[in-house]
Length: 245
Image (cartoon, rainbow, N blue to C red; front, side, top):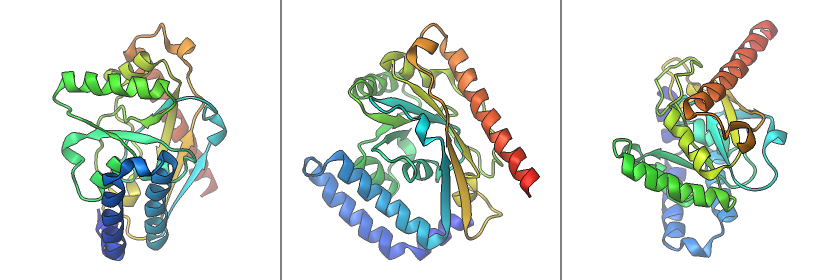
Protein backbone atom coordinates (compact mmCIF):
# COMPACT_ATOMS: atom_id res chain seq x y z
CA UNK A 1 0.00 0.00 0.00
CA UNK A 2 2.97 2.36 0.44
CA UNK A 3 3.29 2.86 -3.30
CA UNK A 4 -0.42 3.68 -3.51
CA UNK A 5 -0.09 6.67 -1.17
CA UNK A 6 3.23 7.63 -2.73
CA UNK A 7 1.58 7.80 -6.17
CA UNK A 8 -1.25 9.97 -4.85
CA UNK A 9 1.19 12.41 -3.20
CA UNK A 10 3.40 12.65 -6.30
CA UNK A 11 0.43 13.12 -8.63
CA UNK A 12 -2.06 15.05 -6.49
CA UNK A 13 -2.32 18.03 -8.87
CA UNK A 14 -2.41 15.74 -11.89
CA UNK A 15 -5.21 13.73 -10.27
CA UNK A 16 -7.25 16.89 -9.64
CA UNK A 17 -6.76 17.94 -13.26
CA UNK A 18 -7.86 14.58 -14.68
CA UNK A 19 -10.84 14.26 -12.34
CA UNK A 20 -12.12 17.66 -13.50
CA UNK A 21 -11.40 16.96 -17.18
CA UNK A 22 -13.00 13.50 -17.01
CA UNK A 23 -16.15 14.84 -15.36
CA UNK A 24 -16.50 17.46 -18.09
CA UNK A 25 -16.10 14.78 -20.78
CA UNK A 26 -18.55 12.45 -19.00
CA UNK A 27 -21.22 15.19 -18.91
CA UNK A 28 -20.96 15.45 -22.69
CA UNK A 29 -19.91 11.89 -23.41
CA UNK A 30 -21.44 11.77 -26.90
CA UNK A 31 -19.08 14.53 -28.02
CA UNK A 32 -16.10 12.22 -27.57
CA UNK A 33 -15.53 8.95 -29.41
CA UNK A 34 -14.71 5.72 -27.60
CA UNK A 35 -11.16 6.00 -28.98
CA UNK A 36 -10.75 9.55 -27.64
CA UNK A 37 -12.00 8.60 -24.19
CA UNK A 38 -9.76 5.53 -24.09
CA UNK A 39 -6.81 7.70 -25.10
CA UNK A 40 -7.54 10.09 -22.23
CA UNK A 41 -7.75 7.18 -19.77
CA UNK A 42 -4.39 5.91 -20.99
CA UNK A 43 -2.88 9.38 -20.83
CA UNK A 44 -3.68 9.43 -17.11
CA UNK A 45 -2.11 6.02 -16.58
CA UNK A 46 1.01 6.76 -18.64
CA UNK A 47 1.79 10.04 -16.89
CA UNK A 48 1.25 8.64 -13.40
CA UNK A 49 3.29 5.54 -14.22
CA UNK A 50 6.13 7.64 -15.58
CA UNK A 51 6.21 9.93 -12.55
CA UNK A 52 6.15 6.96 -10.13
CA UNK A 53 8.53 4.64 -11.98
CA UNK A 54 6.03 1.90 -12.84
CA UNK A 55 6.48 -0.07 -16.04
CA UNK A 56 4.36 -2.82 -17.58
CA UNK A 57 5.78 -5.23 -20.16
CA UNK A 58 3.32 -7.23 -22.24
CA UNK A 59 3.55 -10.33 -24.38
CA UNK A 60 1.12 -11.95 -26.78
CA UNK A 61 -0.61 -8.97 -28.39
CA UNK A 62 -0.65 -11.06 -31.57
CA UNK A 63 -3.03 -13.46 -29.80
CA UNK A 64 -5.80 -10.88 -29.52
CA UNK A 65 -8.59 -11.45 -32.08
CA UNK A 66 -8.31 -8.94 -34.91
CA UNK A 67 -12.05 -8.41 -35.33
CA UNK A 68 -15.14 -8.34 -33.14
CA UNK A 69 -15.65 -8.29 -29.40
CA UNK A 70 -13.99 -10.54 -26.86
CA UNK A 71 -13.65 -11.10 -23.13
CA UNK A 72 -10.40 -10.80 -21.23
CA UNK A 73 -10.34 -13.04 -18.14
CA UNK A 74 -7.25 -12.19 -16.01
CA UNK A 75 -6.16 -13.25 -12.54
CA UNK A 76 -6.75 -10.49 -9.99
CA UNK A 77 -3.91 -9.06 -7.91
CA UNK A 78 -4.94 -5.54 -6.95
CA UNK A 79 -5.71 -1.96 -7.88
CA UNK A 80 -3.18 -1.80 -10.70
CA UNK A 81 -4.53 -4.75 -12.74
CA UNK A 82 -6.90 -2.80 -14.99
CA UNK A 83 -4.33 -0.04 -15.45
CA UNK A 84 -1.64 -2.49 -16.57
CA UNK A 85 -4.00 -4.02 -19.13
CA UNK A 86 -5.22 -0.65 -20.39
CA UNK A 87 -1.67 0.60 -20.82
CA UNK A 88 -0.76 -2.36 -23.03
CA UNK A 89 -4.04 -3.01 -24.88
CA UNK A 90 -3.95 -0.87 -28.01
CA UNK A 91 -7.67 -0.68 -28.82
CA UNK A 92 -10.48 0.52 -26.53
CA UNK A 93 -11.52 -1.89 -23.82
CA UNK A 94 -13.70 -1.52 -20.74
CA UNK A 95 -14.11 -3.35 -17.44
CA UNK A 96 -16.56 -4.51 -14.78
CA UNK A 97 -16.13 -3.87 -11.07
CA UNK A 98 -17.82 -4.21 -7.72
CA UNK A 99 -20.38 -1.42 -7.33
CA UNK A 100 -19.32 -0.80 -3.72
CA UNK A 101 -15.73 -0.05 -4.74
CA UNK A 102 -16.61 1.92 -7.85
CA UNK A 103 -17.44 5.30 -6.31
CA UNK A 104 -13.95 6.24 -5.12
CA UNK A 105 -12.74 9.50 -6.65
CA UNK A 106 -10.81 8.96 -9.90
CA UNK A 107 -11.92 5.30 -10.00
CA UNK A 108 -15.50 6.43 -10.67
CA UNK A 109 -14.42 8.91 -13.34
CA UNK A 110 -12.16 6.30 -14.94
CA UNK A 111 -14.98 3.73 -15.04
CA UNK A 112 -17.52 6.13 -16.52
CA UNK A 113 -15.06 7.52 -19.05
CA UNK A 114 -14.75 4.07 -20.67
CA UNK A 115 -18.42 3.25 -20.01
CA UNK A 116 -17.64 0.34 -17.71
CA UNK A 117 -20.18 -1.64 -15.71
CA UNK A 118 -20.95 -1.78 -11.99
CA UNK A 119 -21.94 -5.14 -10.50
CA UNK A 120 -23.89 -5.48 -7.26
CA UNK A 121 -22.24 -8.65 -6.00
CA UNK A 122 -25.14 -9.56 -3.70
CA UNK A 123 -27.81 -8.98 -6.35
CA UNK A 124 -28.03 -11.88 -8.86
CA UNK A 125 -30.86 -10.25 -10.82
CA UNK A 126 -28.84 -7.10 -11.37
CA UNK A 127 -25.84 -9.21 -12.42
CA UNK A 128 -27.93 -11.01 -15.05
CA UNK A 129 -29.24 -7.66 -16.38
CA UNK A 130 -25.70 -6.30 -16.66
CA UNK A 131 -24.51 -9.51 -18.35
CA UNK A 132 -27.35 -9.25 -20.86
CA UNK A 133 -26.35 -5.65 -21.66
CA UNK A 134 -22.73 -6.65 -22.01
CA UNK A 135 -23.54 -9.66 -24.21
CA UNK A 136 -25.21 -7.35 -26.73
CA UNK A 137 -22.30 -4.91 -26.61
CA UNK A 138 -19.76 -7.72 -27.02
CA UNK A 139 -21.64 -9.01 -30.05
CA UNK A 140 -21.42 -5.49 -31.46
CA UNK A 141 -17.65 -5.48 -31.09
CA UNK A 142 -16.95 -4.09 -27.61
CA UNK A 143 -14.29 -5.67 -25.39
CA UNK A 144 -14.39 -6.13 -21.61
CA UNK A 145 -12.22 -7.24 -18.70
CA UNK A 146 -13.80 -9.47 -16.05
CA UNK A 147 -11.88 -10.89 -13.09
CA UNK A 148 -13.18 -14.41 -12.42
CA UNK A 149 -11.63 -14.58 -8.94
CA UNK A 150 -14.15 -11.95 -7.88
CA UNK A 151 -11.75 -10.12 -5.57
CA UNK A 152 -8.10 -10.06 -4.56
CA UNK A 153 -5.95 -10.52 -1.48
CA UNK A 154 -3.30 -8.07 -0.35
CA UNK A 155 0.30 -9.15 -0.91
CA UNK A 156 -0.84 -12.24 -2.80
CA UNK A 157 2.60 -13.06 -4.17
CA UNK A 158 1.27 -14.13 -7.60
CA UNK A 159 -1.06 -16.75 -6.07
CA UNK A 160 -4.19 -17.39 -8.18
CA UNK A 161 -7.40 -18.03 -6.23
CA UNK A 162 -10.11 -20.37 -7.60
CA UNK A 163 -12.08 -18.91 -10.52
CA UNK A 164 -15.84 -18.51 -10.10
CA UNK A 165 -17.86 -20.44 -12.68
CA UNK A 166 -20.56 -17.74 -12.81
CA UNK A 167 -18.10 -15.31 -14.42
CA UNK A 168 -18.16 -17.43 -17.57
CA UNK A 169 -21.93 -17.28 -18.03
CA UNK A 170 -21.22 -14.05 -19.89
CA UNK A 171 -19.06 -15.90 -22.41
CA UNK A 172 -21.86 -18.41 -23.04
CA UNK A 173 -24.38 -15.58 -23.45
CA UNK A 174 -22.26 -13.55 -25.87
CA UNK A 175 -20.48 -16.41 -27.71
CA UNK A 176 -17.36 -14.29 -28.11
CA UNK A 177 -13.75 -15.45 -27.75
CA UNK A 178 -12.31 -15.85 -24.25
CA UNK A 179 -8.77 -14.49 -23.85
CA UNK A 180 -6.99 -15.74 -20.70
CA UNK A 181 -4.66 -13.05 -19.32
CA UNK A 182 -1.85 -13.78 -16.87
CA UNK A 183 -0.79 -10.87 -14.66
CA UNK A 184 2.54 -11.14 -12.88
CA UNK A 185 3.79 -8.85 -10.07
CA UNK A 186 0.85 -6.50 -10.57
CA UNK A 187 0.17 -6.64 -6.82
CA UNK A 188 3.56 -5.03 -6.19
CA UNK A 189 2.41 -1.64 -7.49
CA UNK A 190 -0.40 -0.78 -5.04
CA UNK A 191 -1.05 -3.88 -2.94
CA UNK A 192 2.28 -4.73 -1.36
CA UNK A 193 3.62 -3.63 2.02
CA UNK A 194 7.19 -4.41 0.93
CA UNK A 195 7.54 -2.48 -2.34
CA UNK A 196 8.28 1.23 -2.37
CA UNK A 197 9.39 2.88 -5.57
CA UNK A 198 9.76 1.66 -9.16
CA UNK A 199 8.09 -1.64 -10.09
CA UNK A 200 7.91 -3.66 -13.32
CA UNK A 201 4.81 -5.78 -13.96
CA UNK A 202 3.95 -8.22 -16.75
CA UNK A 203 0.85 -8.93 -18.83
CA UNK A 204 0.56 -12.10 -20.91
CA UNK A 205 -2.26 -12.20 -23.48
CA UNK A 206 -2.72 -15.89 -24.14
CA UNK A 207 -4.26 -17.75 -27.08
CA UNK A 208 -8.02 -17.16 -27.31
CA UNK A 209 -10.59 -19.86 -26.70
CA UNK A 210 -13.28 -19.56 -29.35
CA UNK A 211 -16.96 -20.36 -28.86
CA UNK A 212 -16.75 -23.62 -30.82
CA UNK A 213 -14.16 -24.82 -28.30
CA UNK A 214 -16.18 -24.03 -25.17
CA UNK A 215 -19.85 -24.11 -26.23
CA UNK A 216 -20.37 -27.68 -24.96
CA UNK A 217 -18.51 -27.16 -21.69
CA UNK A 218 -20.09 -26.30 -18.35
CA UNK A 219 -19.06 -22.97 -16.88
CA UNK A 220 -17.17 -24.69 -14.04
CA UNK A 221 -15.08 -26.56 -16.63
CA UNK A 222 -14.36 -23.36 -18.58
CA UNK A 223 -13.35 -21.65 -15.33
CA UNK A 224 -10.95 -24.45 -14.43
CA UNK A 225 -9.44 -24.49 -17.94
CA UNK A 226 -8.78 -20.73 -17.95
CA UNK A 227 -7.51 -20.79 -14.36
CA UNK A 228 -5.03 -23.59 -15.12
CA UNK A 229 -3.71 -21.88 -18.25
CA UNK A 230 -3.06 -18.70 -16.30
CA UNK A 231 -1.43 -20.59 -13.42
CA UNK A 232 0.85 -22.41 -15.87
CA UNK A 233 1.91 -19.16 -17.54
CA UNK A 234 2.67 -17.49 -14.20
CA UNK A 235 4.66 -20.53 -13.06
CA UNK A 236 6.58 -20.48 -16.34
CA UNK A 237 7.40 -16.78 -15.93
CA UNK A 238 8.55 -17.19 -12.33
CA UNK A 239 10.71 -20.19 -13.21
CA UNK A 240 12.41 -18.35 -16.09
CA UNK A 241 12.93 -15.31 -13.86
CA UNK A 242 14.47 -17.42 -11.12
CA UNK A 243 16.84 -19.09 -13.58
CA UNK A 244 17.82 -15.72 -15.07
CA UNK A 245 18.39 -14.26 -11.61
